[in-house]
Image (cartoon, rainbow, N blue to C red; front, side, top):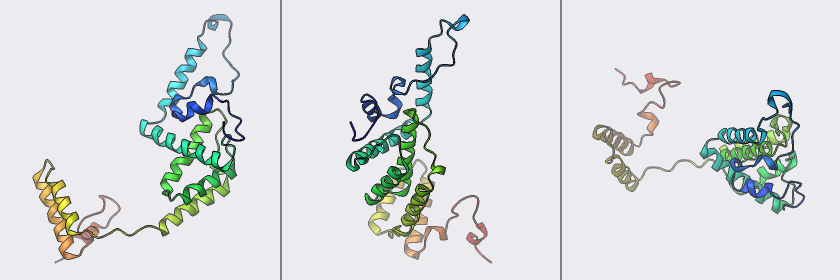
Length: 217
């Protein structure tokens, strides 16, 4: 049991195996609005709750579930080390969690995913939706994290001859020999002409000035 945690003991292990495996029996009991008399007297509510749980689990893609599971486990580890109550979440615990992840040198996008994982876990536990709009301090902390990540962005390293040879080997395995030769030719022109890729290719089909990439004359 986590220090200060008021969750049932059976809830934490189920979350550790992934949010998709949460059992509705671990959630706080809800008042049923389904009448138990008349034509609905034989309604199988537990079976419907199982359907609801399946739909709830299907709301996340498998890859997202794996990311959330990692984020949730990281949050529990943080809460245990900081002797904080993990759920229900608080503004202070989330802000300190962001600082903890920043110190661990995690990317800002990863931190955002982990915060989403904590939010999803609280919803799955039936503890309500921790709205970020009601946590202005957390919003400024995450904004500062993103700006700090931009300032610390490492410039891309130049392509060296060994890297160019490895790219050539990869392109040679392409199904289209024409495309492979075109990529190799473009890479060689950039390499020997000391050019950036943006100087010889169009970044995207929209939102770019294609006239700057056309030969003049």
